[in-house]
Image (tube, rainbow, N blue to C red; front, side):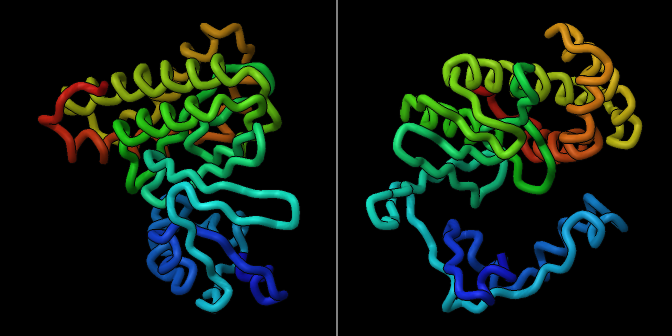
Length: 229
């Protein structure tokens, strides 16, 4: 984004995300806790963006480009500053729309720090209400079975989050849970008929340690919270 901005592009972002684009120091520090020494290899440099190149989008606001309008829909859950973009009858869902490889199931990625499961479920309702013909998840491709896509996502939010909650409440540590979580996910994905190679693709796209640490953080902050609606 910063490179594009320096070539004259405007960068459209959630109001809560704008400060991180202007000064990415806090974002970098948080990301390094997840990716460690792989930061530079994965993402290259992160540099500040001139505030004059940043445009914040409120919930429901549209931006027009000639005949085309793109609408911003605030969809927190994966992150507090998450936006789904609506273009005609398609939704660009980002990570709140889950990870789906080929015709496999929709799996939610749960990296720290600000996973909010109830907000995520509410965001799924908002995306469903758009009745999209096409869904464009960041990972991967184009989907045209919106009901099934979101059903699978919602089901797996509940299943995966409940598994981690049970293990955390019984005293398991995040580090010890990672290999057990990998086994759990292997079994879950096998239940959809996926073979080892396809299961490995999901693990690469959504590493187990990120979901364990993200959900553990969530459940520790909501230890006495009510069940998910």
